[in-house]
Amino acid sequence: MALAEGIKRGTVELLVLTLLSKEDMYGYQLSQELTVRSNGLYTLAESSMYPTLYRLVEKGYITDRQQKAGKRRMRVYYHLEDIGKNYLDSIRKEYCQISQGIFYILGINSIKTLKEGIIEPSEENSSLDKEKCSAPSHKN
Image 1 (cartoon, rainbow, N blue to C red):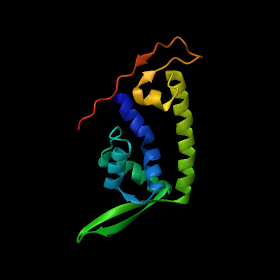
Image 2: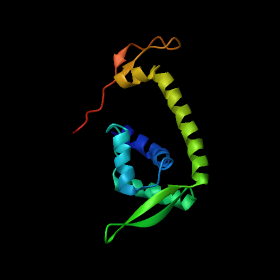
Image 3: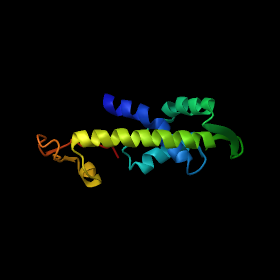
């Protein structure tokens, strides 16, 4: 579990900015979209996301605006700014390079391999035995 939490902390900015690159969203919507678009494999409580949103606003990567939702409720929508798009491009490239290196080390050579959780030995590292990765259990 500690690894999953560390990965979430390290990727939440990337994923939130990616979602905001498609459309403006409010906090609960962002949280739900993360879950839906990851097929339930990546969940993040709203309360865990807000510090990241506030930090991104402080840095000028995103802006926030209040919009009335219903008679009395206000929603805070977040919008990706141009400087945030540049930052997203940068961290996306960095994430992909790091992930690619990790996949090479683990012997994950294809998306199919990744989905099936099978580690295949690569030519460079033939000492890896073909084995199954333990898949996370999901509660429905």
